[in-house]
Amino acid sequence: MTTDSLDEYLKETRYCDIHSQEIDDFYRAIGSRDTNEIANLIFNFVRDSVKYRFDYPWVKASETLRKKTGNCFNKANLQIALLRRAGIPAGYGVYLVHKEILKPILPPDIYLLVNQPTVHVFAKLFIHNRWVNLDATVDFELFQCFYNNSSIWSHTHWDGLSDISLDKSFVVEDQGVYANIDLYLSQPPKFWTDNLIQKANCFIEQTIKKMKKEQNDGKSHK
Image 1 (cartoon, helix red, strand yellow):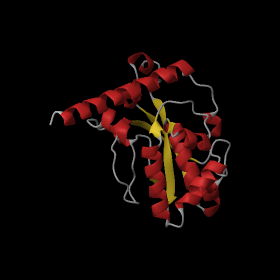
Image 2 (cartoon, rainbow, N blue to C red):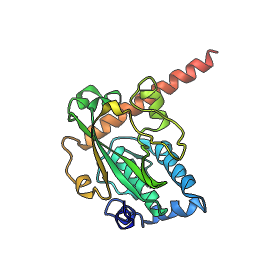
Image 3 (cartoon, one colour):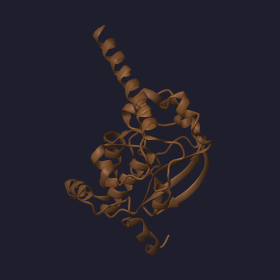
Image 4 (cartoon, rainbow, N blue to C red):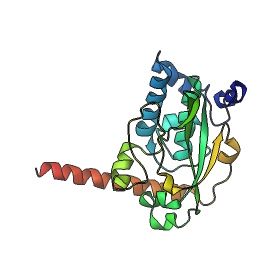
């Protein structure tokens, strides 16, 4: 990997709007830290403070930062924008994956509409002279509610060196790392509509609400 080619992974794009006011404010709030600290702070923020919810892919990073919600495309795009603003080369990792990774979080009728395999996007950063997978898709609340007893996702602390990604047994094809996927993000959705997005997100929120109620009821009976 040459220095010139890495420059592509620091650039702004239409959706990775690293020079927007929101992204700039976040960067300035980080303060002076080393590269590992910054990457870890951004990873933890995007993973757990930006809740996983379904959305269209054509959402700017600054908008996802305002919303504090997004799907894998949105969360990866925000994470990459924040890393690039901090001067850390970052790109879009693209997998084709078994659609079963979405089964726990979708109503059955919407799950049937999902392609097999389906596309999963996550952030990769270039650190210590190599690319590292740092997948911030699944927040802790989502993990607890839907994936805690599954091998699909883990929710672990990043040690600054290792990859964090979904279980490789669910990956059909690793399509590599890209500096710009704006063309893909801007494509019309295959089946998603406003109503389906709302229904899918209501399913997630109602299931999480039920889990929390059961947890609180369990505590009150102790």
